[in-house]
Image (cartoon, rainbow, N blue to C red; front, side):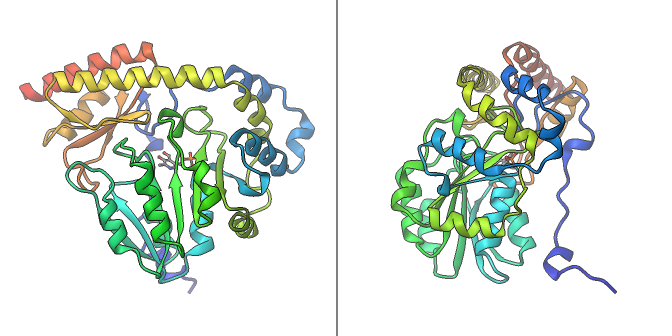
Length: 353
Ligand SMILES: Cc1ncc(COP(=O)(O)O)c(C=O)c1O
């Protein structure tokens, strides 16, 4: 009888919340502002040949390298940041090798590590949910092949200190240290300039968030040219589709769209933080396009109450350190009026119940 590898058979399936998403979906950290009109215009202008030919990733890699101030050999375009993570993990992690990260963090790290049969070593962030830097430094060993850190982190929205991240990279010269900068645009600090001096460092980016291209699936992995060369060997040659590649230039060119969206998100996350403070609820200072708030034991009722008002948010209670917490994506300024009102009403409703 055909059986999958043991590491796959024992994997808990990822349950996508996408199937049932009627309402304002503030549960996946997508951009509520859509994408640049220039990107849409480019999509509409695709010719039959653009679609019938195999995509040329290399042209896109030159564009992104120029934009980031790197050489094309340091850049690999991927089918979303998820694929970039899958490539790093499968390049360096063999069965039984160690993968290190700190919970709570992006769920794909554990899924990918477990699928590869790696030994998944999970550190625990402290009560404030900040990166447990000292624990990383004590736990690092030559068996550790990949260390994954989302900066800023999902679901907390917190950013770690630049020099702490470098300390971790320097303490683990034999491990691929991936700094997942999916939310970079909402934060503004990066480890990209440090790639030159740290051959084991990788920095990942995505067009899914600030650029609003989650549906096109476009991610970027950067690192030392030699290491990116190894990743290219295990990447599928046509992993990024023609539509995404065709839109890349327009997306990068419309920085005014990105800056305006980022400014609105920053305003929206401040509004959320102010409201939560007013309601006496703790939330974490976010450097991303979402906010994590601790509602307490009634969090399930809160999420349901928001859903009855047509707004989907994510209950994070099962993540380490996040008991009673919900994560909410920042919406557009117009939508935020209704979102803030719905939060007030829902909190009042669960308090009265
Ligand atoms: C920290 C982090 N990394 C990576 C991703 C995946 O991004 P992409 O849509 O590019 O696969 C996400 C998506 O939410 C994320 O939160």
